[in-house]
Image 1 (cartoon, one colour):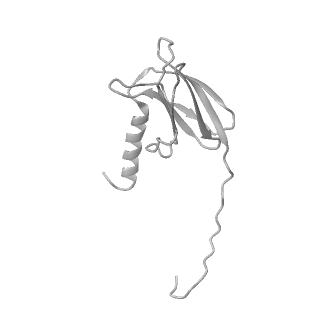
Image 2 (cartoon, one colour):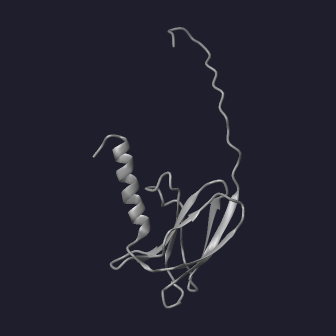
Image 3 (cartoon, rainbow, N blue to C red):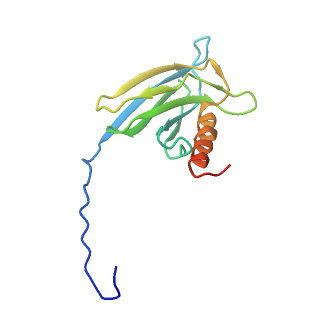
Length: 131
C-alpha cells in the first residue's frame, strides 16, 4: 500500500450454490414409544460449538423434519436435555441431494449436542493458544 490513491483487484471464486435437503425421521425410547419433545440438532462438524441455528423438536409421534444444505456434511443429534439427559447415537450425514428418513433410539446417557459444544470450544481455544 502507498500513500497515493490506488485500485486493488481481487479475484474471488464463488462456490457452486447449495440447495435444500430434507432430513426427516423419528425418535423413539428403547421400549419403542415415540419420544415426543426430543430435540434434533444438525451440527456442522467444522464448527461443533455453533449448533443453535438448526434445531427442531419432535412431535407427539416422535417425528421431526429438518432442512439442511445438500453440499454440507453434518452430524445429527437427537436427545432430551435436563436433569437426566439421554440421547441417540449421533449420525453422520454426508453431502448429497437425497432426502433422508431416519429412525433414532434414545440409548445413550447424556446430551450429545452439549458434548460437541464443549469439545468444539476446547479445540478452538487450543487453536488460538488459549486455555
